[in-house]
Length: 392
Ligand SMILES: *Cc1c(COP(=O)(O)O)cnc(C)c1O
Image 1 (cartoon, rainbow, N blue to C red):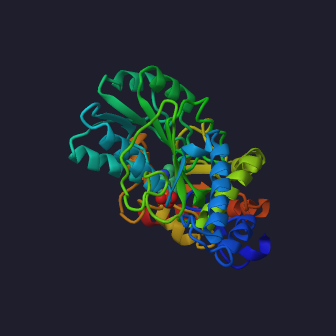
Image 2 (spheres, rainbow, N blue to C red):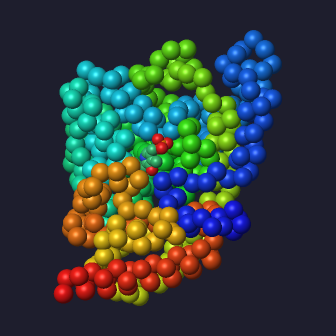
């Protein structure tokens, strides 16, 4: 493990993507070469063997969230799954129910799907989370009307790692006859998910955040109560007409195994990474002027998001090329604006521009965290000193 990172920056950006687990890579390889058939070729062996492999993967994915295999629909990732959940249901039920409730700190692919729906006349209410990043259940309850079709609230936030009260949201939605969709891209294999106990109707997953390959994910579509949706990609009628297009068998097989490994190792990974995350935080917090963004208690153990007084994030990133971490989310850092997520939870601009996100992962070692903590302490001190001198 140490060898393969040699000479490369320490990777602390596991919210953006994760390395593919070597066990997953091994499982995928035969499906690029001898088992290369089209899973939708129903007339011969090449199709049958991969169709069977894909159904095993479907069961592995279903098991991670306590769904049934026939409730899992493969997609290209969570972006597509979120688009399908939101646009698909809104279009199917158009004319009957016309209101969706979501949160201002959702991933951009959820927000952008909602903006598109608003242009088509769907009404959307965006809840604002508290300073801890969590939604207020009373506010959600008050926002539901008899026009409300769907509530879409992510399970774990991708910048600040906070965990929303899924079971409470699910119970509220079910009691009001409203569908509950959750984007679980950052939650899967990190916290236990149970679509039945949590009364979740739609749930989005992606493989590349759980040590599987990029380019594959799934939408869970509950059948009790049954959720109907209009497909957004049509053609050959694969995935029971919900999502046409040839599925990438090697990726699907890898996704399945990544889910199985994730379920088996979730608890150990979470405990180990929590210890390392807290060590990193303690070391840096000793400097003073360090603010944790969002609730520390209701948070996945591998996430840390802090703002550093007296230092801009871009200066720290420039001073630390030996560490791979980010400011805000990978998707929004192309534009110069500070994180909309941090602004939504009331982090003031100076501190929002001084925010650092660390995402630990299955392959993060104790030695890497020691080095990262040491280097951070060193460069925060340097950047603060330089900034102070420049101001004098
Ligand atoms: C990464 C991510 C997505 C997008 O997933 P892709 O599979 O990369 O399309 C959506 N939502 C959240 C919360 C994410 O972290």
